[in-house]
Image (cartoon, rainbow, N blue to C red; front, side):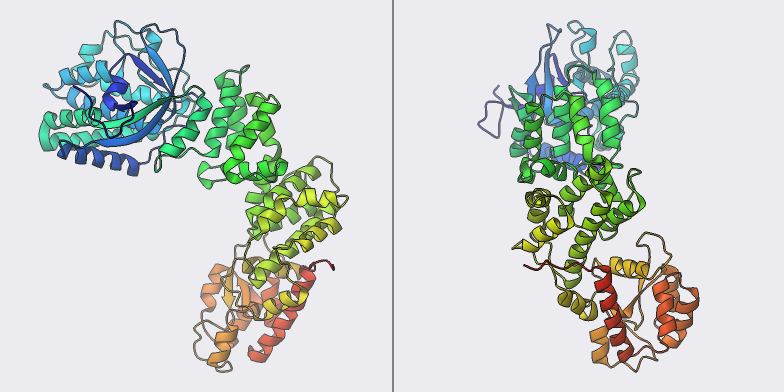
Length: 587
């Protein structure tokens, strides 16, 4: 009987046809681990139940990209899964889970054995021992999948039925395997156990038949496995996306010919990857675009992997050399993104770079600052000039943020700033300032604009304000930790209690969120001073605060009223101009 399909594509297949022959689907050892989260598995199971309830319904899972590879197994076809491993693995885990549920009952063991030999392992009379298991995942998932199959084979009477089978479990497992296979398998077991309670073994078998017979995929066998991700992304909207990091990793392991997979993984890739910290922080994935812009300033973000690959091919780099190439700017990037110092930088250089972390500077700055850090680190650039250039960038960004200018245009400015400065002779303070001043689409606030914003703009809640207070306190000689770990206190409270009659309602609305009315306090002290009158706050500010700005404020102002606030606004404007002195160069 012909298969029922949702498309006219001749390569659309029921899931049954992926598993019912002597076949191996290998996920390259170097590919990312299985990563479907519980919400996606739950949706898969809901789709399965919905499809079962509609006898004539079908469910299309998307595309699976494979690549036929040569093997030493004459009776087994071997394919690499280039993309689509998430759904193939999910189906496989559900097959194992269903078999295990059935194997735990007297009348289900025969069906469990049928599932095992038809869909999970290759025929015992034709397989080469290394070709036993039909799904062979990446290195991080191999031991967990072995454990899942061992649990199945030790269940009920299936243990007796299979104890003479010499299954070759997967080798080359990672030292610290992923836990996602185990977690999702346990969820799959719970799912089928619940269905068994509802409808017995018959319902479990019906669900398996639905999954195999009414779930389908389009299988695409590509000639060049490196083209697989492009096809996958265009066909699989909503599926687990291929990131630039995934593509880079795949490319690195595919091009290495001298080192073993384990050597490349453990001694080259792993130190590089783990240097970015917890993968959930996004630092690894966000590294490649600024890295690529350093050498190719005009590359688009969507094209970054292709341009990197073209460079590696042109230079004939092996996988390990690609990792070495990528690591060139990694310390500089991590310093800028985490605030952690680089030992090669002197105190003044390290502190100057740290300020961009403290201000949460735009990532558009990274191609320039990463290169500047690298040049200083390598001894190719004068540290004093570096500090001066960073002071110019600090003034530029702080002034823009204070007056409220959007970051529009900064990417275009900073990605070519190094080359543009070199075109003026050399990368120097004057050259950098001249290039930035001449940018037609980016405004650099003048002294007048900056001072006016310090005096009048409502800056509470603005991203740059903690940095303003931190740096103005530091400029006074304040002895504070080099972090923005303070709370911001409104001297005139936002919702004042009795004792603030000196400010009219109009003046409160005008002044309460301006910089002159704000002070740094520890969180505990900020809670303690509450909304009471200034007479109660002042001794706490003066005697107990660890911030010099706050102590000096209390010593200077015996009362806090509109005139005192305006006077402080003028002082802060003068101090801010001294701290961030650089405006646009004269034309």
